[in-house]
Image 1 (cartoon, rainbow, N blue to C red):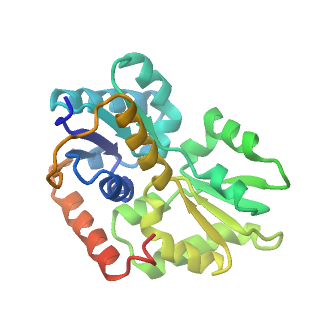
Image 2 (image 1 turned 120 degrees about the vertical axis):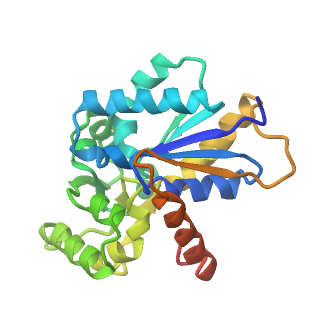
Image 3 (image 1 turned 180 degrees about the vertical axis):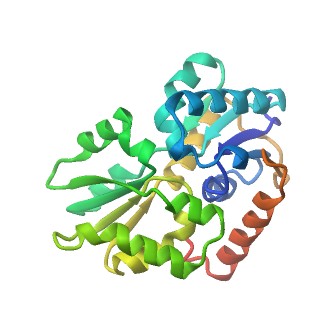
Amino acid sequence: MNSSPIGVFDSGVGGLSLLCELRRLLPNEDFIYYGDRANAPYGAKTHEEILNISKSIFDDLISRGAKAIVVACNTATAVAIEPLRSAYPNLPIIGIEPAVKPARLSGCKRVLVLATPVTVSESRFAALLRANSSDGCEFIGVPCHELAYMIENDKTSEEIEKYMSSVFAPYKEEGFDGIVLGCTHYPLAKNEIKRAAGESVHVFDGSVGTAKRTKALLEELSLNSLARKIGTVEFISSDGSDHLERFYKKIIAVRKSNPIASR
């Protein structure tokens, strides 16, 4: 069981930002990355559709021997994580959540939490914001209708920055000093988001915390790999393309060329 792979799934390329953190913390683990590009974007689907899709992907990853599954999608986590845990009680399941707590602890006073429309409408998301809206820190959920689609389809930096400027425009007058990236696609456009928001605005990403939680849970359950070799990654895209692997290689190349800016 220790040598079995960890399953990671997202609606597309977004979860690759989390995969990078998982591989950094767990270099000896093997991974299966499932990108559901055929059904993307999840942010435009109903709760029932997201749950049914998630269960189908879980069954696929389990059939491939996954010892644990990381839901690298904020929308799927918000909608389906509890039903999934009930449906697969013996499987370690780790979901990703927006980095709201780190933003609060940073001392920021007014924080925009960027997410898909479905995530913003979820009670789980609203409860997370309420629980952390204290100590003089205000959190505001901001639906980004187009951002995940733009990243998935390789829109230019100029197009993304222009779109984000329009998203931030209603909040500029009162101001904001923090942004939480509430979708795993969004870190892939971190530079464009930061330019649109202003260089003084702090940006928070939940991938690091999720990777740490995955590592701790595997060790707690004695499921961590004992291998001394560098682990592998198998990419599966529901649309049959090689887009995921090409996008991943591009991310790795950027991180190697500028490791500080990429974090």
